[in-house]
Length: 301
Ligand SMILES: Cc1cc2nc3c(=O)[nH]c(=O)nc-3n(C[C@H](O)[C@H](O)[C@H](O)COP(=O)(O)O)c2cc1C
Ligand SMILES: Nc1ncnc2c1ncn2[C@@H]1O[C@H](COP(=O)(O)OP(=O)(O)O)[C@@H](O)[C@H]1O
Image 1: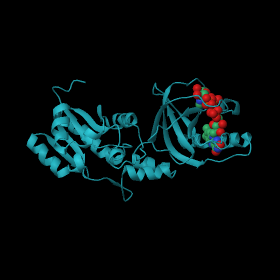
Image 2: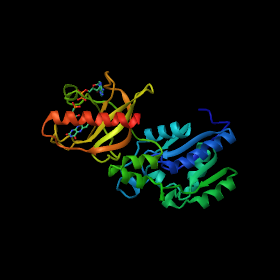
Image 3: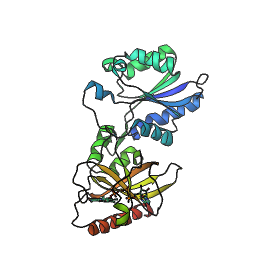
Image 4: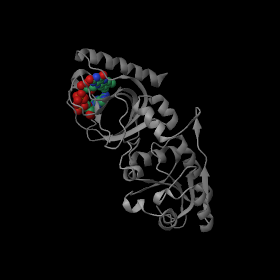
């Protein structure tokens, strides 16, 4: 993308989940970019800073690729810069982050940050200091107030708790869009087809939060943009497996075709039930068919 002449408006944050709070920043970023004839952009990191600073990785709602894709699709952010978070980045003073990286390297003409945005070495940068520095540099800066919904401050931390507890519909409201996992379809045990419900097998990459084990109303979106309702199990499949490997398996409704090796997006909308150990495969099959009807109803209601 040629940003040499136009420059970028850059929204700053980690943006895990790309929730409605992030949305306030990203919408304003897109608006300012339009006014200035600049490229709407966002800056995120490949690794969550807390993974390095606290040495305890936070399980994330999104991979960097899903974050970038959500920002593009829902908020028109054309350019997502995924910075590498390492020791060097951690030790970068906040002024250098702004002057050297954002303005120098990425041609920022305007910055947008949240009310509690702390950044740079030891988190010494904050919204007030950012605003003052931008004035000095002669570039624009917006600080966006916090977003509340249903009396709660929207945050990635809160949404992670919801998803870990199976409160998917509530999480979706706070996200402002379905919870998302993009992955390549892999081979399973080939039981699904014989049981009458073939499934696409996916995985949560390491470092990504696994939702509460159970069955979910989902939609599968194919690479060509077409989509179908699907009923998806997340868990260890106690009926057919005795290991503890977590799988994500979707039975796509009204679909027949080979998807192995394809990259698909699974969108999670609602939680139907917990994962169970069935006495017979026939009981499992009957329950999956009931869940398929519930999924159908969800999208036709
Ligand atoms: C909607 C849905 C619900 C499921 N629920 C359960 C469950 O409650 N307990 C369980 O052990 N397995 C459950 N499964 C997993 C099935 O056991 C698994 O999909 C089937 O054995 C096919 O496995 P395969 O893809 O490796 O061939 C579910 C699968 C789907 C698609
Ligand atoms: N309706 C469908 N839902 C999911 N996968 C389907 C569907 N129809 C065909 N498939 C294909 O069948 C494969 C799954 O068959 P299955 O017997 O469950 O094997 P596996 O154990 O590899 O999941 C999928 O990867 C996909 O290519």
